[in-house]
Image: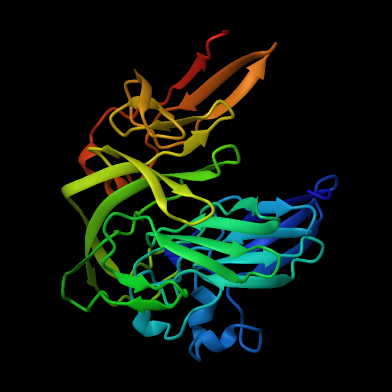
Length: 367
């Protein structure tokens, strides 16, 4: 992008300070660094307490951002604050964690931000994709957050446009039609507390999709809760800095593929799975939506109605992103299988299942 390679940091569960780095693609020279947690005196520092909490505040950017060349803005999601569940050591909204930041790629300056979950104590990272789309001539940005809500923002200046719940069960708090956040359930010191969605989120890092043909968004949904007991931990370098013990709730866990109208945010259709849907979805110009299940099925749906049209058993769960491409005029579809890590967080009943690690490719019919 503009002769720069932009990369984000990870490690939010270890008490580090998140940042973005830009490097010259030809020479490897470090061009700029933007921290996602401000130090004292910088804009946003008033949302952190006095003391060292900001220096280990998290906010890491471990999922790829999106660039708008017309506005010359880079949109990047940020992760949870640290420690994840113990908010007592970091009173305040904790900017710029759990946010989207719009960055000038020429110098790394943050032009605007929007925080999806202020003072997060539920591990609701907002790293996940920000989908750029246009509606009635307006440049917009869509984001499905781990907290269970679907946000639409004006991507020029960051104004709030709309919010819609997409998670099946949302008990941690409520976000009203004006974007006001009202927390309802907090982790407590030494006392088990249950909330939905759990730290795996109503949707984790795996991506939603948008079809300009149907003007609908398609999102994989995880309906999994968690029991969290806050346990104060002093920060030590290299030691996980969660501030709690966490047990995912396997009973009644389920998943969905849901479709939402871009114009209203209303749900159009849903398809239910017995397991949380933990893989990215893909929408194609042929009005199909593809999504893989934890139990190994790879599915094709009618993009307008949600009808299941085709299914193939791959032998392993899906936790990655399908893609489509063409060779000599023939369209193909490829999907990797395999779990990766932290299965217990987003699909606990699949612990011990076959891990896979294969790439499947399919050819669409020629007629």
